[in-house]
Length: 113
Length: 113
Image 1 (cartoon, rainbow over the protein chains, first blue to last red):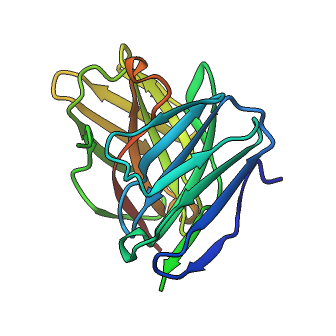
Image 2 (image 1 turned 45 degrees about the vertical axis):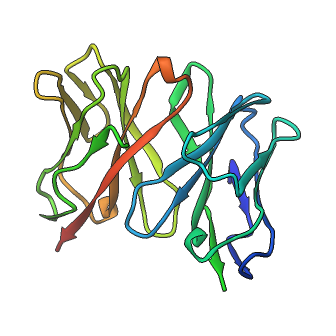
């Protein structure tokens, strides 16, 4: 059974049109992460939550925002997608005390046209 | 910038042989080093981690070695199988960076029949 679920698997959006990617988890983990992964590159951390505490990476563009309304759900909002934002977006969770073992969703592949 | 990186982008290994994937790191303050496996079209999957005060840790068919003198980390996979084909990432976590998991560049492992 999937424990970290990302919807949709594939998303096509227009240049400049806001888009939201969603992630849900059934693990009841405190920590949730959003990573951006471009082709043949390592996942790059955008931000993460410890419960409701939001931690933004210094180099994450303002164009990227996130919301975590409750433990189970987390959203990635891209306010004005550019062509350079086309990537795989990965959501992950981990449990405090065992943060090294993160559980990843299958990702959402975003295409910007 | 990234604090971990890999020596080789691609490794080809005969089925049944042992595989050794290497990683160099620069952050001496890392508390944990972690290996993740990413199969095509999937999110990364945790394999094994090692605390920075250890030299070796074994799992099922995998061994991680840590050489702090030369800041080098390796993942050894015994009796490589077709299902081991994937991209392998080393990653690190520092307690002074809270819950972050920072990924290094990946190595693609090809299994030859």
